[in-house]
Length: 214
Image 1 (cartoon, one colour):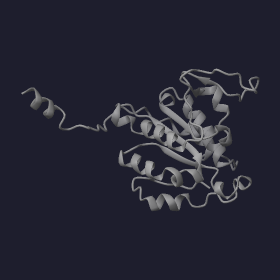
Image 2 (image 1 turned 45 degrees about the vertical axis):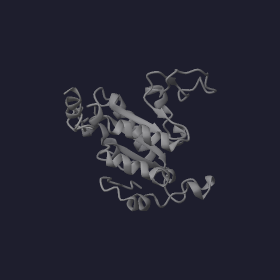
Image 3 (image 1 turned 30 degrees about the vertical axis):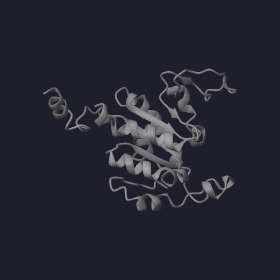
Image 4 (image 1 turned 180 degrees about the vertical axis):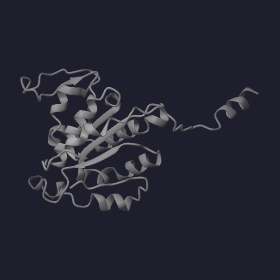
């Protein structure tokens, strides 16, 4: 019977395949300046991340699969140099002239932009991150999303969405930038984070591996 055949063909849906082709891992030597060959040179964790991200984006195999996602403003995290390199994604391209158009760090929106700058929408940003982080099982294409956000507005605002992403076996990086009790004192206590790891632990996302680089 057609109805029976239809039911049988759909009995295993939704189906989640975890087998997919993965791009080769870039050689460790490319990141040596941040650790093995640092020669005692110090830099902020944010600067180290942005420089490392810029190098990874240039990799011909891995670069196209990287999805940088920012809630609010990428300049806060020192990512302005990536605007020219990979551009900010816009479905309609750039329809305005930036005030600093003559600068090498001016905004550049493009149809093929790679950075997702979501504005003040942590919910939208984590949704984009989840889509990219589960692409390996949904579309058979392994992506590497980096969601960079004000650390106080991560698990505290979208903890349930992060839990749901983990439940879907998402693969990617969540980076709570500008963390610490004294980092953004001028913005007020709501920006001074000293509890993200505690909140993350309370959420009981068992598959999450956390690290405080500071």
